[in-house]
Length: 193
Length: 193
DNA sequence: ACCGTATGCCAACACTTGTTGACACGCAAT
DNA sequence: ATTGCGTGTCAACAAGTGTTGGCATACGGT
Image (cartoon, rainbow over all chains, first blue to last red; front, side, top):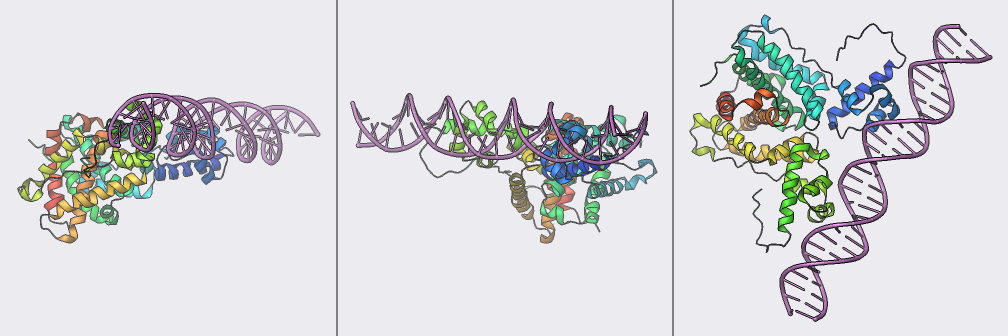
């Protein structure tokens, strides 16, 4: 997402590349890595399967391009410490509802080692970095971030992947008010004995 | 798991059937539904692929048999209400570490609609039923159960599927003490405004 | 001993997969 | 007009998939 490309002049095939990427994200999000076939993606993008290979090299390469993702975490230092949990849940929910890339990554991460590795990278780097910005015991930072990830990914998993009815039917606002205190404690709570 | 079969007399092929089921669970847990091939499962069980078809009908049938699962939730009415969260996390962790069936189901549920449906059934029925045993507002029971599922499945997802390092390295006891208060609030906490 | 049946293996089918190479068209520069 | 190259289509390959039918063998009941 939002790649800052070097000032290469636009190619005539940019529209096709974008169509492929869009179709790929949809299919990966809906079907997972293995069920999303290059033929189906090409059909959605209304081009020939061989174009996918030419522009992205392989299925793995296509997925790597389609699963580029930035959590776009806000600057947590400018957030009132007591509202960290609320801000985080709300941000994650908005990020998920508005961009299916993360759902694609989530689905694929269950079965594709490369996707799992990327997911690990995203949360280990971006989330842990954000948690580290406000000064708590540095030895606990990784664990706090991991716990936050567990609740936030569990929320996404039950709501967007498994689609548990109570999690699908609940409004984002209600989810925020239930889950925010959890993240708040994971982030700033005193470690249990 | 632990199926209570009618008193049919033991077949000579029971050992083979069991070997297939064991290999299937391992493969489904390690690779997910689509990457776990019948040929690989048969090779693990040291029999011919056609035997799998004869005894389980199809790959879907094999998965259905291999993913039979009971959460074995304890009787929550005999638990001190203040310790419900702790008891639940500990139970889930133990259940996961000791039986790879749930991991198989979890992996498969990401890409296989049937597996997702089964996962929904398990949590909608077994967990919701357990939550309903202690009397809270019945209109909130499903939501409470859903929230518990989100945290518990997120724990499993980050620890066993994506394998986020901080979640893998943390001992079960530490996880319990962090997560128990979360479940406790989801189960018995007053609903937020 | 005989016979029906359960158990197992082998070979093959029909299909889908990712991937590749050859060939046609159209644009831009010379 | 001609050359080169980017863009696109078509057909095909090799490998792997779930699945099926036929055939051998060994067991259990009579």
